[in-house]
Image (tube, rainbow, N blue to C red; front, side):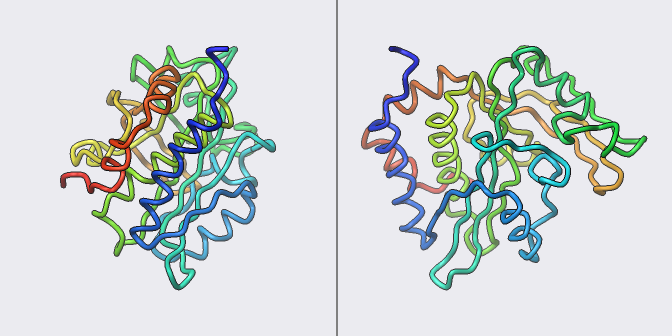
Length: 238
């Protein structure tokens, strides 16, 4: 019984962050069609290209194993985008998944450039096994930045991932500058999460590993109270 997701608790938790987004002037929706999602991201001029993790032409995202968050303003123009997917690493770990390039491509032999490389030296990545939810492709339009949208998006994404998958871990690969600004909503991080080069994608990153365990996430959702409302609507320090 302890492993069951309480839908009422998740609903209350979600409502806090959905209401907080509405107060900022953003209407959020959850989608599952990644072809549509990629078409939206490509039509959003100031958003960087979506990584192959979330592109159906490069990655296989089975039904029920991924979702995207889209936020629009009062004029129905895109103001927020992000995506998440589930990796089944019961026979592997996140470090191995990254370094094999299987985190990015359904078939690295077919899709990867011969010079593509990913190195993961974050020690905890080797301990991440089982159901690992990966959150990424987060973008907020400039006029909504500095208003706590990172916290709001994370609250929505954590609740949806918890409800759909009850994962063993939720993780992200983030630039150190985001951590330095206190914009992370997950309690653990280590440098060297992904030293990445994808030649044809024009990607060269050196990101930290950022994560929360499944038990920590469950505890957070189940301890939901009015303090979540205060936390969700407060902008983080810059």
